[in-house]
Image (cartoon, rainbow, N blue to C red; front, side, top):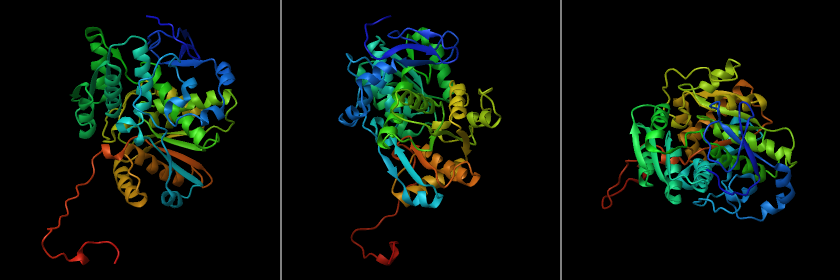
Length: 412
């Protein structure tokens, strides 16, 4: 189906072959089964947009409208996607001995995670192109994002998530109005259900990288970092990596910004953070491979956001790591949970497990020497820590009995 849409998009292209595909048409994967990437007339974009114009706009994701595929005559499906802060963590910075350390806190977005960015753009485009029913497999947060934005758009949604998805997120998916189902398996098993039901159910498959627009929404993370740091990018960016869309998206937009002359070399070294219990990107990178040759055989990690045993975008993620002189690194779950609690008590910043994994990875790579004391580093907290389990707080006092204040703890 086609619609008369206006934007700076020129076409889509196969990420493997470069074959062009028309814009303003609903697409899944390319003919070769590879993700499609959106291409823009960047010269035309640069001719009408300046950094000064951006600075005058409201502080939300849609200030970067020219870099996004949604036509100017279409209202976005939005829940108020605010610019997220870069939060200093001075105690952690001093302990790890790096020149600068900032946490990009994506937990401030609608539905409490970075998934709001991709879903806002993808659902907006789906609505513009006539989609009425969408399905998605998810480790949790993407499903919550889809449920919310699809409901906002008046689109029916079906969400399939592993049975052990954190309870808050699983309930959130259903609470937002999705047809939600727990699946006794991993996210790849959920993806198979979506793929197998496509013809019978008539839904559009919004699986990671099976459509082109979630990448575009997540580009705004890179745009925000560039603008927040006065168009001088950090030396390294650490991101918790499951499907890998965010690394692909940020690298894409950094190169778009470079092409229009808004930023200069060097671009950041991009770091994929995974778990020792599920690290297909790390395994491939360490072996010098250009693709993930086979699925991770025995998934044991409880860090849900990185629990993707066979990412569709593995080749693209590895390309980013090699092209940026970055790397992939795996961390232990136990160290992640310990760091999450320690950072919350140390800095007052409540990270999700995936965000804490990035801090553990940074500490690990300072020891290895892949990160130096002169490096400026941004790590991503991909979701609100409130969406994940916390230890119980069960100490009690009786209101009308004498209190021995010396037993309450704290400094004397």
